[in-house]
Image 1 (tube, one colour):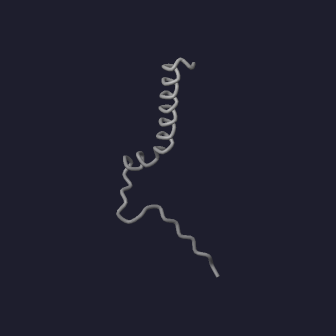
Image 2: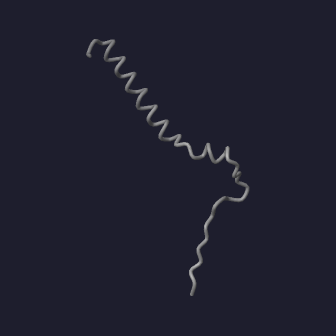
Image 3: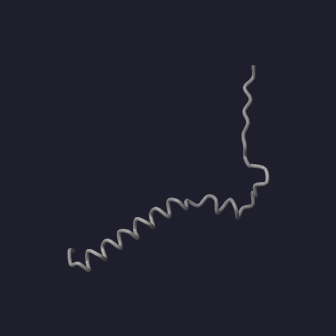
Amino acid sequence: MEALKEMVTSFPGEETTSESVQWENLPWIRIGLIAGVLLVTAIVLCVLKSLQKI
């Protein structure tokens, strides 16, 4: 009995242009998390500086 392997490279109706592939490969979640952490850090440091705690 032979095992069948089926590989799905694209879904029906999905665009495979180079522009859409380029935007899909960007790690938006990682960029958002890093930006969020940096923003919160900057806000905390500004608050602590204004209260003269640092």
